[in-house]
Length: 101
Image (tube, rainbow, N blue to C red; front, side):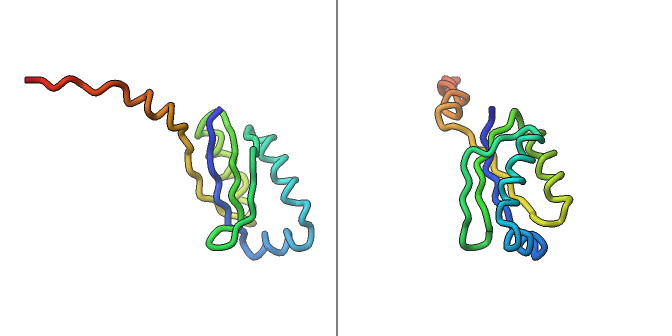
């Protein structure tokens, strides 16, 4: 599974829904699971974004489809960041190429 960070901003409609039925947030998390992801951790934020969710999914295509589905409802928009474990990054860089002379 790959890890993705979803920064979400609620629309006025999404804010109204959250205020009226806060448990709707957990329903969205269940929908994320139905769409192939899994919410690992979640925070409410102060500032430009309303929530930060750490989501696991098999690949970027799953996250893309998931955020399109959720965004199409008009209650939230998302910025998605792929999180790459540092050890995987280091391993992918491999040893330095020898200088040719």
